[in-house]
Length: 436
Image: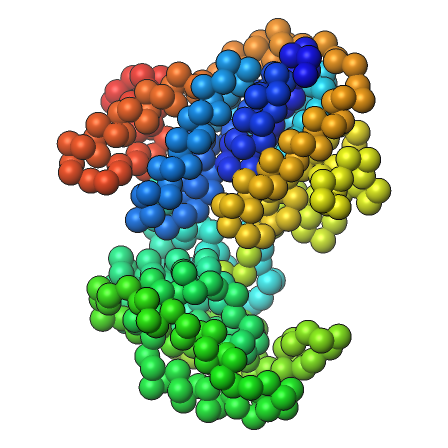
């Protein structure tokens, strides 16, 4: 493809970087803008910290992408209504196409009383905190001995693992609005925490909910197997904390004293079947449980501050795409503006999904470019704007220096991996600010 084409990509996680790699390998000039200093996104700041082999394998792929001479990287640059660039300013530079692959940076809340209390958090903030993403890495989380997690997916598993193994909590109560057959975690993830499950309490809970399962003619063994399927491959127990499930319950409020959460109020549910799907329906019966911490692991949403049109917590997609891939639209109503990864479908799948979705988005962009004559992207205006931001901007060479310095520090400390936890540390290592 003619190298005169120039595409901007917002986001340097797996979707953005794999899309950038595919476009650059086709001869397209690509400029990647990243909110964070370090590229990697979900890989750096979403995967559980001890998965070193998986992370390093993906980092190698990212390094290959960044080494392409057709790819430029600008880290520490925010594209948002009140960011370093507005989306309209980015469009005004004349890129032939823009791909939004910024992930699901918005936070999904339910709008319940007590969400503002100290000790009530969104799982994403907790995950970012223990994965050393600034500024979440400096946030002080109030983690007590009895913690409730709302939701029963893979993020719940990671958070529960962190609470028990790192925070040494006594109890983690997993609150799920439906039954055990509808949990969303995978066997491979659940094996990390299944050894902490209080089996006696689990069996009592299964007995408690049996009438609700029978009401929709659901075999209790379906749910029991789904929850316990990883027992044979369970990781060894490393702490004394216990995990409990509370099924058929939806949070309705958090109650507190002196500004901190002390109780979680839930409404008991029944199961209902509609169009072959099992759902939850509230009964109006409420109960409270004593807790010190409540963490919502209910998925994420897109960041509306980017400036694209949104609807129902998603960026609006073109209903009749000109360039669908496998029947999926990666186009927005704005010609030449595409979306991929979690920016297209928030919190859907893991890294493999984001990688594949980013690759498919790149294919849609390539098809679009073949219908267009190249614009004259105003590179000079871009460089002037970047230089005028009056803050350190991270280039590919800086990323290399940072990775080398962190690897050396890990070696010095005898660790598998070391990661700076503040922007100031990273900037000092790269020589972009003076050491205090």
